Image (cartoon, rainbow, N blue to C red; front, side):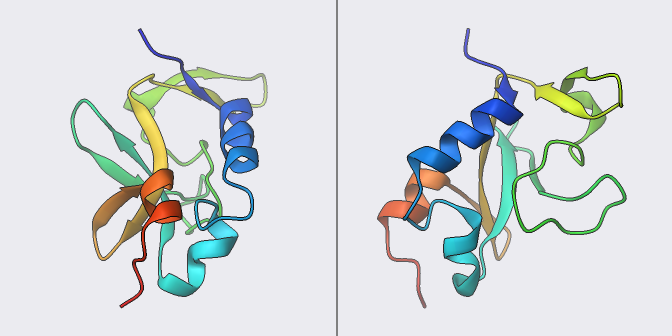
Length: 107
Protein backbone atom coordinates (compact mmCIF):
# COMPACT_ATOMS: atom_id res chain seq x y z
CA UNK A 1 0.00 0.00 0.00
CA UNK A 2 1.03 3.61 -0.56
CA UNK A 3 1.31 6.56 1.77
CA UNK A 4 -1.64 8.71 2.79
CA UNK A 5 -1.55 12.23 1.40
CA UNK A 6 -1.18 14.62 4.35
CA UNK A 7 -0.36 18.30 4.90
CA UNK A 8 3.18 17.21 5.76
CA UNK A 9 3.43 15.31 2.48
CA UNK A 10 2.20 18.38 0.55
CA UNK A 11 4.87 20.51 2.24
CA UNK A 12 7.51 17.93 1.32
CA UNK A 13 6.33 17.97 -2.32
CA UNK A 14 6.59 21.76 -2.36
CA UNK A 15 10.16 21.49 -1.10
CA UNK A 16 11.01 18.87 -3.74
CA UNK A 17 9.61 21.00 -6.57
CA UNK A 18 10.82 24.37 -5.23
CA UNK A 19 12.14 26.58 -8.01
CA UNK A 20 10.19 24.68 -10.70
CA UNK A 21 6.74 24.97 -12.20
CA UNK A 22 5.74 22.02 -9.99
CA UNK A 23 4.60 24.48 -7.29
CA UNK A 24 1.50 26.63 -7.58
CA UNK A 25 3.17 30.04 -7.54
CA UNK A 26 5.41 29.14 -10.48
CA UNK A 27 2.77 27.85 -12.89
CA UNK A 28 -0.17 30.23 -12.42
CA UNK A 29 0.85 32.35 -15.39
CA UNK A 30 0.32 29.27 -17.59
CA UNK A 31 -3.23 28.92 -16.23
CA UNK A 32 -2.62 25.83 -14.12
CA UNK A 33 -4.71 25.56 -10.95
CA UNK A 34 -3.76 23.38 -7.98
CA UNK A 35 -5.75 20.16 -8.00
CA UNK A 36 -5.92 16.56 -6.88
CA UNK A 37 -6.66 13.28 -8.64
CA UNK A 38 -7.70 9.88 -7.42
CA UNK A 39 -5.40 7.52 -9.34
CA UNK A 40 -7.86 4.67 -8.81
CA UNK A 41 -11.03 6.30 -10.15
CA UNK A 42 -9.67 9.16 -12.26
CA UNK A 43 -11.81 11.67 -10.34
CA UNK A 44 -10.24 15.13 -10.15
CA UNK A 45 -10.94 18.19 -8.01
CA UNK A 46 -9.48 21.67 -8.07
CA UNK A 47 -8.11 22.82 -4.75
CA UNK A 48 -10.71 24.87 -2.89
CA UNK A 49 -11.31 26.28 0.55
CA UNK A 50 -13.94 24.59 2.72
CA UNK A 51 -16.51 27.15 1.52
CA UNK A 52 -15.84 26.27 -2.14
CA UNK A 53 -13.76 29.32 -3.11
CA UNK A 54 -10.83 28.48 -5.41
CA UNK A 55 -7.52 28.10 -3.56
CA UNK A 56 -4.22 29.32 -4.97
CA UNK A 57 -2.34 26.44 -3.33
CA UNK A 58 -2.97 22.78 -2.57
CA UNK A 59 -5.39 22.45 0.38
CA UNK A 60 -6.86 19.24 1.74
CA UNK A 61 -9.82 20.85 3.53
CA UNK A 62 -11.96 21.34 0.42
CA UNK A 63 -11.64 17.82 -0.93
CA UNK A 64 -14.65 15.48 -1.22
CA UNK A 65 -15.65 13.81 2.01
CA UNK A 66 -15.30 10.33 0.47
CA UNK A 67 -11.56 11.04 0.02
CA UNK A 68 -11.03 12.07 3.66
CA UNK A 69 -9.33 9.58 5.97
CA UNK A 70 -8.81 11.72 9.07
CA UNK A 71 -9.46 15.15 10.60
CA UNK A 72 -7.98 17.01 13.55
CA UNK A 73 -9.87 18.38 16.57
CA UNK A 74 -10.71 21.55 14.59
CA UNK A 75 -12.27 19.44 11.82
CA UNK A 76 -9.45 20.20 9.34
CA UNK A 77 -8.50 17.35 7.00
CA UNK A 78 -5.21 15.79 8.05
CA UNK A 79 -5.07 12.90 5.56
CA UNK A 80 -6.78 11.67 2.41
CA UNK A 81 -6.79 8.34 0.61
CA UNK A 82 -3.45 6.95 -0.49
CA UNK A 83 -4.68 6.95 -4.11
CA UNK A 84 -4.91 10.77 -4.14
CA UNK A 85 -2.09 12.72 -5.81
CA UNK A 86 -1.53 16.44 -6.04
CA UNK A 87 -1.03 18.19 -9.33
CA UNK A 88 -2.71 20.79 -11.49
CA UNK A 89 -5.69 21.21 -13.77
CA UNK A 90 -5.66 23.24 -16.94
CA UNK A 91 -8.61 23.28 -19.33
CA UNK A 92 -10.07 20.27 -17.52
CA UNK A 93 -6.94 18.12 -17.94
CA UNK A 94 -4.99 16.90 -14.90
CA UNK A 95 -1.19 17.08 -14.85
CA UNK A 96 1.08 15.75 -12.11
CA UNK A 97 3.55 18.10 -10.47
CA UNK A 98 6.35 16.33 -12.33
CA UNK A 99 4.64 16.77 -15.70
CA UNK A 100 4.17 20.49 -15.12
CA UNK A 101 7.72 20.88 -13.79
CA UNK A 102 9.47 19.07 -16.63
CA UNK A 103 7.45 19.81 -19.77
CA UNK A 104 6.75 23.02 -21.64
CA UNK A 105 2.98 23.57 -21.54
CA UNK A 106 2.97 27.15 -22.77
CA UNK A 107 0.66 27.66 -25.67
